[in-house]
Length: 415
Image (cartoon, rainbow, N blue to C red):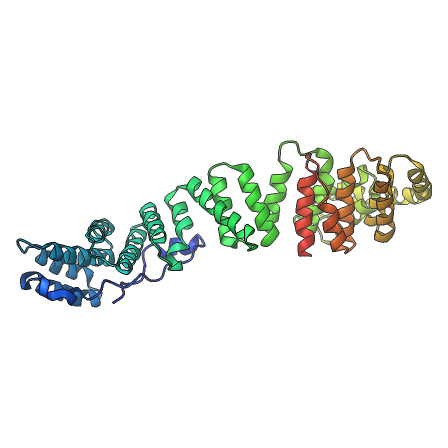
């Protein structure tokens, strides 16, 4: 006979994205298997209770079990049978506390087999879950796992149960250990596990842990919302350099997170200020073609920005050859890197990358990590995925360059 499926709280459970525990283990073996040790005044009401249990009439069964309890001078075995049946009946009726007290007494009697103990613990997990006592549910689920229980509907829910009980620190510790074990074994951690881990770190204000969990999510299960969060968090890290703002915008654009007029305006202005005139014009043109620019109270300002981008690009064409000669002659390769990135932005990826590689090869860069980051981005924009990943993995700066390089690496691996 099976106890009824869990029902209370399923809507909350499903809404939180957790799997639903749909059934619990079977009730104990036939109560009257050793009827010669149970007197009629105990056995008769228990036999009636057994029939009621099979029909799912748990409260009525409890009433019959109470009749059996009224017998005088009960033997140890009779008390065990009563406790065992009362425990399963109470679990079915949703009386978790009575179920726990009764089944624990039965388990401690020494008369329960190992399999029956596991069945009892499954019933208690069900009862406490239905009572929304998630801490007790987690405690029994933990005990079940420690004593050899393997039902994945029980063992797989322990972290979620801890989370629902409000013990976020313990849940984070347990989930982090599971994630570490998955990675050590070469397995990809499950999405819901990483999401729950991130939520735990957020609840306990562990920013570093939260960002690390987000990075794993964006590496394995990327979506726009995760990209939005991780880019924002990385940019707000202590020590993140403002000079990387344009590189942040480049990642926002690549991941679909550049959507507002203000964002396009800021990115275009940064590109023009840093001499990436072709890129600046491309951003402005894209904003107009997507109807992000051209209407509203900022329309005139946006048109002026387009005029400026067009003029800057036209003026640049007059001096580009000279700029390339000067960059090639300079001891520092930074000018070549910037000039090359400008060509990449203009759609001349092959030429631009060659100049960037030449600049980095001079080995006299003021900020080599900046150069390698932008070369990695250039490779990715040019469709050279393998080179992009290899280059980005060499970026080690502590000023935000390595953080951005990791995110660009995840993006490159997915595109």
